[in-house]
Amino acid sequence: NTKCDDELETVSLLLDHVCSKDDFPCTTIQLLNDHMDEVWFCRFSPDGSKLATGSKDGTIIIWDVDKHTLELRQRRSFKEHSFGVSYVAWSPDSEHLIACGPDDCSDLWLWNVESGDLRVKVSQSPEDSLTSASWYADGKRFVTGGTRGQFYQCDLDGNALESWEGV
Image 1 (tube, helix red, strand yellow):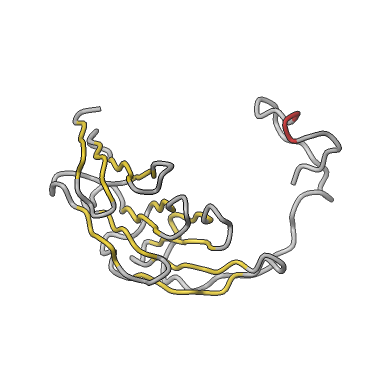
Image 2: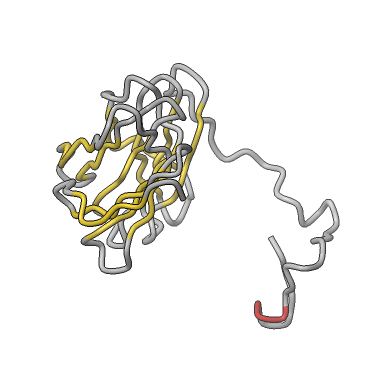
């Protein structure tokens, strides 16, 4: 919501943002009530066309974003996350989505958002916690890790290509 005549490069993250109440967004465009419990994480796709919301209720909802009205329309949902969904990561091409659970969850789900298919469910060890993930820029690999200090580099089929313990 920063309205400045200068280029964005002149805005510093080291200074607190200050704006008048007139410049602060205060109009609700839409309420989303489709989850049955708390929403733990949400993230827009890299191309800005979709929003993924993950909930304590164990579902991910994929929303299509109308670029003109900014309203959301539910595209599909994924409901197989028994521990809840506390983190999601979009692939660089916005085609795949990784879903991670909370601290006590050793599973990770890799969904094909376009087809709605579960590409792979990854679980390296029942003692692991796979609570976060990040994609490589090529979209063919990702890294996942958790609170116990383990990290795995995986391919799109869920195969561990490399691992690090005790980080």
